[in-house]
Image (cartoon, rainbow over all chains, first blue to last red):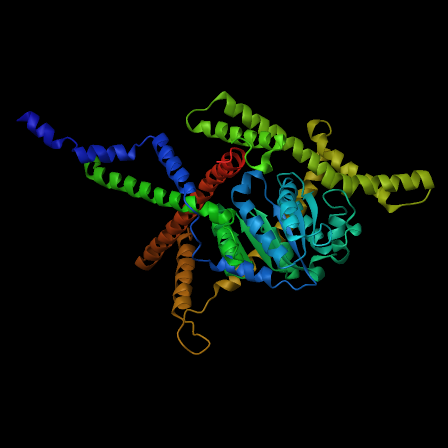
Length: 300
Length: 235
C-alpha cells in the first residue's frame, strides 16, 4: 500500500520530461541553433514583404537631397559592429551613388576603424558606379573627441566645431591630402549652408548629433544602428528629431527592398536565417514555458 | 576545385580568409570551455586594436590638427624671423603635460586643475545637450486624444496610438512617484498599468538584444559560406 502511494506522488513521465525541458544542456540548444542556421543558409533568400516607417522615412529623406548639397556620411562602425552596420552601409552608399548624391565620409569622435572600413567598401562600389574620389565623394577620416571618461563633453565640442567649420576640424582627408585640394570639399565649408543631411552609422550613434547639430542648425539626421539600441532611438524618430532609422539587419533588408536591387543584398540574405533563428527561439521559449507550467503544481 | 573562383587567387586574400575563419572558430570554442587559444586571441585582439588606435589618432588627429600647424609656426618664427600665430599651438603642451602629473604625489595638484577645467566644461555641455535633447520630447508628448483626418473623418489608428502613448506615459510617471504611499485604488491600478507597460518595453528590448546577438553569429557564418566555401573552394 505504501509503495502504491509513493508511486502516486512521484513525478509522471510527462513531468520528468517537462523538468528535463527546463534543464536542457546549453550545448544542445547551440547545436540545434547551428543546424537550423546552416539549413537556412542553404535556402534561397526570402523576399522582404514589408518596409517599416523608419526605413521608408530614411529612404525618402536621402532621396530628396538637392543637387547643390552634400550628405555627411558618418561611418563610425568597425569590425565588431559589421554584422549589422556593413549591410546598412552598403545599402545607403548604393543609394547615394545611384542618385548621384555627393557625400563626405567622416568618423566624428567614435570609431578610429570606421573610415577604413568605409573606404574598403567604397572602393568597390565607386568602381561599379564609375564614381571618382574627391569629386563624387571624399573620406575625411577620423577625429577623436578625447579618450577620457568624460568623453561626452569633448564630443559635443567636437561636433559643434565640425558643424561650424568642417575644414578646421578636418584639415586633411584620410590619406593626408589637404581638403582644399579636393574639388568636392571646395564647396563644402559648414553644415548649415552646404550639408543637406547627416547619416550616422554606428553601434549606437551618439545623441550629440541631435543636440549639437540637428537642434542648433536644423540639419535632418538619419541613424543606422544595431538592433539592440533601436528602442532608444524610436522616441527621437517619433518626436521628429530623427528623419529616419535603419535598425539592424532588418533595417538594411528593408532599405534594399526600397532600392529594388537586382540581386538580394547582404541584409536580405542575412534576414532569412535570422527569421528562422527567431522562430526557433520562440519555439524554445514555448517549450520552456510548457515545462515550467507543467511542473508548477509539483513544486508548490 | 581549390581556388576555383578567380577573385581569390591572391594568396594574401586566402590567408586573410583562413585567419578570419580560424579566429571565429577559436572564439566559438568558448561555448564548450574556456581555453588557452581563446585567451591568447583576446590578448592579440586587444594589442592590435590599441596599436591601430594609437596610429590612427596620431595620423588623423595629432598630425593634421596639431603637429603640422605647430611645426609650420615654429619654422616660420625660427627660420624667417616673422611672427606666426600657429606657434601658439605649442601652448597646448602645457595643459596636456599637466595630465601626467597625476603620477607624482608632489605635483598631482596640477592634474586637478585640468580635471576641474574638463569637469566644468563637461557639466556645461551636458546641460546644453540634455536641454536640446529633452525639451522637444516634452513638447511632443502633448498629443490630441481624438484625431480627425484631413477630410473630417475619424483617424482610428492615430487616436488609439495617442491614447496608448498617453496612458503609458502617465502610468509610468505615476509608478516612479516614490514620495507618497499608494493608498488609493486609482493610483495602485495606474502603477500596475505602468509596470505592465515597462515589462512590455523590457520584452521588446530583449527581443532586439537577441536579434543583435544572432546577427553576430549569422554574419560570421555568412562570411564562411561566401568567402571560404563559395569563394575559395568554389562549392
